Amino acid sequence: MPKLITIIKHFSIFSFIGLGFYVFLIGKILSLWLHPQADDIDMIYNIIVVLMFEFFLINTGLFISLADRSWFDWLFGLGFFGLFAAMFNSLVTGNFILIIYGTMVLNRILYKIHNREKIDKKREMNNVLLNFKIYLGLVFVVACGSYFIPHFGLTKEFLETVRYEVAVNYDRGIDWSFEFVDMPHIAMCFGIVYYFTLSFMEIKSAIRKIKAEQLIS
Image 1 (cartoon, helix red, strand yellow):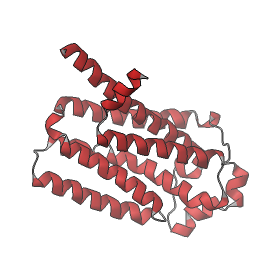
Image 2 (cartoon, helix red, strand yellow):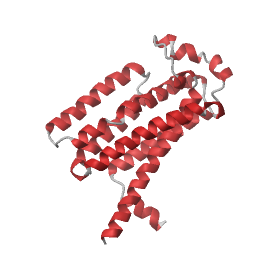
Image 3 (cartoon, one colour):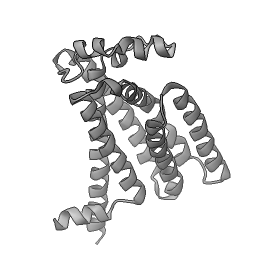
Image 4 (cartoon, helix red, strand yellow):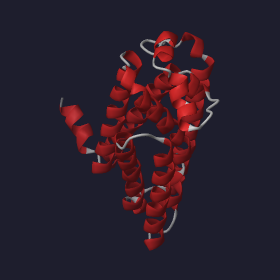
């Protein structure tokens, strides 16, 4: 318990918020995967869009953290957030997931701006490259092992009963030809592993800070 308290003390408010969102999304994705309901189709679709948007957001903080701290940083960050919100809002349905994910993205941007002077630029570039590798690596692993991923509640029968294909393609006027959309159980598996990995990295970062302080003292 004392060790856990020490780790928690090394979390910033931004890390706490980010970790909270990851835990929330893991729980939400797990519930949709295990016990989906007929009225959950929009939420399943929204989660899949979130997972696809993650790829484009990985390097967002890199520019902000490497740029000089100025009004331009704030304008770029807020401008990007506005553009992201408009694009995201055009694809998702309802406001719940938009508010949740939009707040999470804004938290990431503000963290980068607020801690720019404390961030090691070389380490930050390495972290971005690591995030790219994690995202693409997990996509590859999940895609290759898709045959072994259980459907749980997202069975073919369930998807046909709720007219899933019609709901996510024709009703929205978008013809998605993407494995994550066609087979949502694969996307749910990827989402849980991906956000669990990000949570682990947050905790590992706090532990690294503790070890660095111990070496200094």
